[in-house]
Amino acid sequence: MRIGVYGGTFNPIHRGHLTAVRAAADALGLEKVLLIPDNLPPHKALPAGSATGEDRLEMCRLTAGEVPGMEVLDLELRRSGPSYTSDTLAELHAQYPDDELWLLVGSDMFLSLQEWHEPERILSLAGIAAFHRTRGDETERFAQQKAYLEQIYGARVALLENPDVVEISSTELRAQLAQGRGRSFLTEAVYGYVLRRGLYGTHADLKHLTPEELRPIALSFLKPKRMPHVLGTEHEAAVLARRYGADVTSARIAALLHDCLEDTDASFDEITRLFGRTVAELVEGVTKLTRVQYSTMEEQQMENLRKMFMAMSKDIRVILIKIADRLHNTRTMQFQSPEKQISKSRETMDIYAPLAHRLGMQKIKWELEDTSLKYLDPEGYNEIMRYLNAHQAEADAFMKAIQSKITTRLSAVGIHGSIYGRIKHVYSIYRKMKAQNKTIDELYDMYAFRVIVDSIPDCYNVLGHIHDLFNLVPGRFKDYISTPKPNMYQSLHTTVIGQ
Ligand code: MN
Image (cartoon, rainbow, N blue to C red; front, side):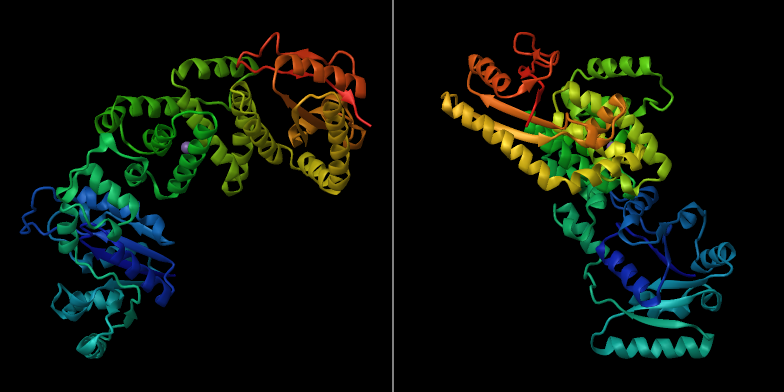
């Protein structure tokens, strides 16, 4: 395996570093790149607001997801006293004895390599990959230096082109950040980290951020592999809030932060200090719900838990965010391990689908149930899907006929209404098959129609006409108008035989 070794101050790590790593990885076929922030030499007196070694390390970690195979090591930061590249390479060589090490260096470093501590030791332990600037006399000096190192030290030297070179020095970048500029040179998460910690003279007012301004800061709390999930949850939370009339901005904000207590060492107090009490309580509420161990629960406990959920979230947005979180998890379930797919799907079926149901979020309940079924009983799920796909044209024609029968009658008697037909969702069909011990083509109860009218008397009128048009199945009539469901849902339900 070829391993790249990239040391530097990374104060802060920026897009210039990342494009260099990408260029080297491509050119040399590196499978792994080790990013090693160095100890700042003590003679460099640090100006106020400078990043500590810990900050620089953390910022490097936040970028690890940007390049495949990139890892961040703290071995130079841990070392006390002077830290030499030759020692670092020796340590890495001991750790990866069978692999080929390549030291990535910029132009200044490359051109002065023979003046480093123990150049012959460095060059015996690693090849040198130098970023080559194809400009003017630099090309010439690079070629000369390559020939010199090869001749004197028997070095392996690769000159790399860096076509996407980002022209910024760290000094210049720090100056820009102090003036509220420079964001585009950093990854979102690193920019957020700089603001959150007030590094390099930045002063962001974190309590009054829009979701757009908060996004990088939220990412700066996360492990790189978790970032897409949080952005996905933000999106789902906004969709849910819009649909259910909750405040979209605060739903976005809380969703962006929903995993930051879970994922990092951020504390409730720190979140309160940074973002204020309301946001901190939302985040804590979501975190508490996340930490409950569902897998070991009995039926009775489940019911209690569902009640507890409702009681615990004084703020409905907590539940909203938790459902957005779960919705995003189920939609990306194919990336989980088989064990996780099963346990998460079980949890979704037992907790989140009933919760969505209780909140009147029917479409979301259906999606949660169908996706979970796909993992809990793939065969059962596929059988139903195959049947539905094969009979789609037939089902469409059937629903159209029923719909037009109802429409004709309503317009004949002068009732104004809209009619929507649908095939029941997969899990509902699945449950019916199990309960009635039937195969799917023996099942009749597969279609649902909704008639929406302008007044309550019209609801009862339509019901009369439906019962006149079709044969009714006794014992299935429910009047949720006179007795609304706990979530205020009101309608009439009946079951009839269509033909
Ligand atoms: Mn989450």
